[in-house]
Image 1 (cartoon, rainbow, N blue to C red):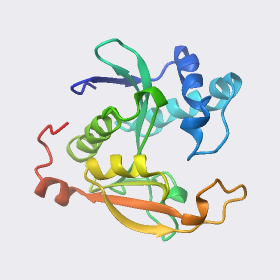
Image 2 (cartoon, helix red, strand yellow):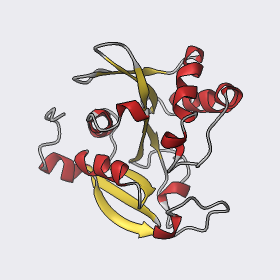
Image 3 (cartoon, rainbow, N blue to C red):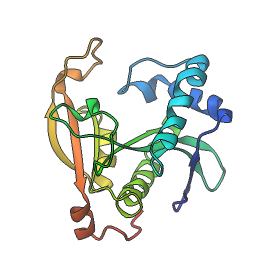
Image 4 (tube, rainbow, N blue to C red):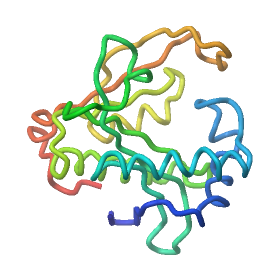
Length: 199
């Protein structure tokens, strides 16, 4: 999958070192787990998990993102089908059957922040969800204090839905402000001129 500046492709076992440069960066993991990952964790847990989504849910998955100009790995973008519940989005289970709801995610190297790559990739996946995968809604969530990620969601067309307060066993700094949830329905996306490439 290509955007103006990005090439998105499936992960392979050769991506372990690149993923380590991502999940091994404390700045990247600040709003996620607060802890970095080792190469063994990447090989044994992270890579298989990223690859499994494509196999379980054809059309959905996680894509490694490279710049088209240099081929540099800058992170990943993901879409997975989920089953909405009354619980916080972060706890929504993978879909069983067609739910029409896709969860959007992304993780970029610190060196790629602030250059519009996250918005460009997120918009491409929103477009895929609505035009290629039959989704009726795209959802996303992050910590309330993660203003960078919230801006990406908004620029991709998602709108703030609610703040939830969760009882995490090892809360990160800022957890007291809660987690925010964003949503975008297909009808809203189409009304806003959806299919046009506004990257």
